[in-house]
Length: 136
Image 1: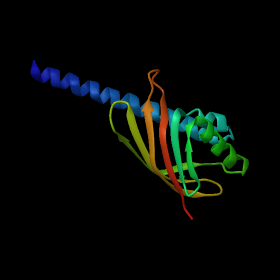
Image 2 (image 1 turned 180 degrees about the vertical axis):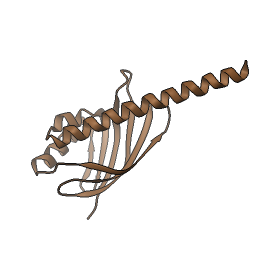
Image 3 (image 1 turned 60 degrees about the horizontal axis):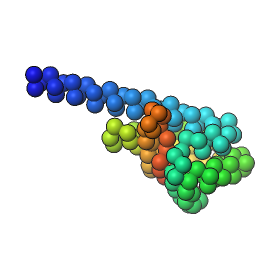
Image 4 (image 1 turned 45 degrees about the vertical axis):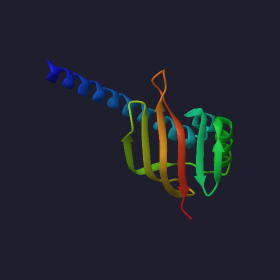
C-alpha cells in the first residue's frame, strides 16, 4: 500500500509539472506573438501586476504599467521578430518555472538570464520576473 501511495504521489507531481510546462509554453508564445505583432499591451498582459523587468543595460522597470511603457518604446522604435534559441526550461516548484535562452530580433540580440513564470489561481502562467541582456 505504501508503494502505491508513492506511485500516486509521483504521478500527481508529474501531472502538475506537465500542466505547468503547458501553461508556460502558451504564455511565452502569447508574449512573443503580442510583441511581434506590435501589441505592447498584450505583451504587458503576460506579466503579474507587480512584476519586475530588468533589461541590461536599458534599465529596471517595476509593475505592469512601466513594463508596458518599456515595450511600447521598443516597438515604436521598430523592434520586432523576436525568437528564442537554445531555450532551457526549469521547473522550480508546482507553480514556478524558469526559462533562460538566447534571443534575437530584427535589430538586436542577447540572452535571457531569468524569466520566472508563475501559475496563477486561474491556471494561466504570468511573468513575475524578466531579466535579459542586450549584447553590445
